[in-house]
Image (cartoon, rainbow, N blue to C red; front, top):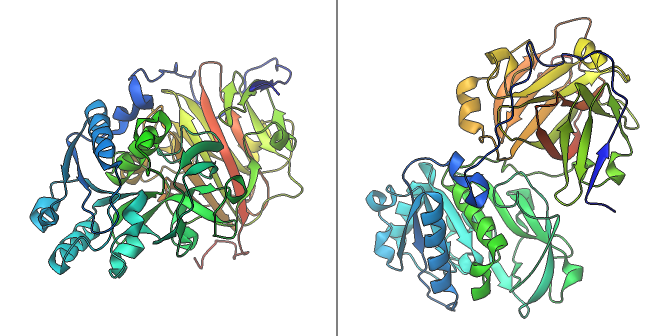
Length: 464
């Protein structure tokens, strides 16, 4: 099957001004160069400490790891210090750093005072990045075990394996294919972190020998932890890993997120059903209403708006009532699109406008018509929105949580809007979902659209 295919429909005779009051602004693609525009979301003066002390097995890839991280810092605007001296773990010294990266540390590497200093650093908002044997560290320190997410148990021989990417919205995995094939030393863990952390990627245990986690084998994850941020990747045993562009970008994304330079939804996620998974087959239940189309790229699993102004909507087996809708989206520049909820089935996109609600994606409109707003009805909390928002060229994740007539909007895991419908002509209690193609000059991409049913609530959604 071709990597790219277009879903086409007939062109209407009149333009439908859905989600706009004036003509669309021209897209302004990112031109920042390397690392997919990673610098665009960075804070000024970020600083990362790489800690690689070992009290057990020592990986011979540590020098290559330190060199690679320093190169990533030089190319992407953050400073890197490296040490094996545990005396660096004081409150005063740690306060200099946006993130501390534990690079294949092993065994008991900090004393009690140093542990307390690091706990305080995390609780004050610091960032942790754990690489490979960071999970083989500090077994008698419960805080660290929770921060890392899981402890090492065993590993088979170094061998190729298939890694399933579960979340493409995080900067550490946004660049990866659905199946990432690579060679490394694949850890088994003493527990499964899925219930407490957000799994970004997992191993296909059928693709190699020696996996012992009964088919659910997380290998990279992130979490908000006691006030700070934690990212862990089980890759990074081999020297070759640190020369691999895909792994280096994976590591860069984890560092940027942990340091607060990029945003993502790292809440635990279970129970969602994909309604668009990046394949043409998953579009069988979707219908186009109005002009324009969407372009499918199966290589990266995205749908990108083309022309219009119309809407692609999900015609599933039932209308949605109480549910959580999650999806990832990206603008190239000052573009315009949105997600519609709570509208009846129709080939006319005005049905969604007049009977449902649009959650807007737009960089520069007025508050009630810009990103995070319930279009034309309620602005997002702009301070929270701006803090949670990744810039053009980077992926963002929406969760739209509908319970009764209540609609809550989460951007990269942060609640930015809370709206209750009081219009008798509209209802959020049942209806369909759709994504908008706004106009010829607006390009917005979507991927990983998934839905989870929620327990029914009262009309206002009160009780959560």
